[in-house]
Length: 322
Image (cartoon, rainbow, N blue to C red; front, side, top):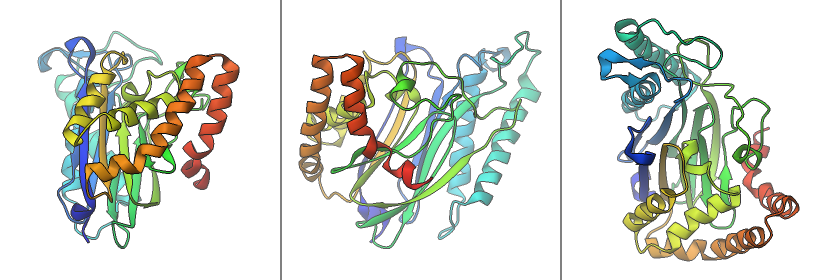
């Protein structure tokens, strides 16, 4: 069976508060029988506030995310059948990111009056994945995950729920709960001033499973990581099909987020939306109960207790990767 046959459907959304120009971008393709991919790029608005007057006065953050999304899509479309997404590919991808971003700066950049550690030229974060078959795609998927910064890749399965695969590349290494309440500086990001890495990890994921890549505007405005999973599951349970799921995710996010938000989420191994909902019904009840306990008593002690109960599975794949 091909990847295309194992793919049930996918959701993709991009949102900017107050109808401003979105500095996030994404690139994805789920059409090939042997390679699916998606990546989100979050233009770093504060670090990349420098404007390029000859490019419609756009910010460096906007230009970086859009350019990197185009480069990523171009390079992924050139991957030959049966070729792995390996370190050689990522070295070449990084080289192409830098080449295109330097072209912009050399052609359109003007001397930046802002200097210091809080300014970068053409900065963005990235987090993405490539899916290839690992035997029968209805049983298992091979997942290559790559990132630069604090955008994330998750998987979501009926028994285990939402699980974060990427590690947030932030100073001080705050966990997912603390990260909702502190503003830790990025330790890694795409830019042309300082070196950066495309961190790479690989997984064999049992199916059925959903894969999610998202910028921090999508997951970073909830009370706890558990509430973020509840938002995804609420959106799923209140929908009759994937189109409604995508709309529910967007509409529920709008009043919550204060940042540009981008996400792509394919679902593998289900044969219908009804089957998907039935499989996640028990998990939805569990997460709803966990969040209700926090909502009823939002003390630090209650939140910590719920988080400690939740995070063992949430970080399970990161623990395996140590």
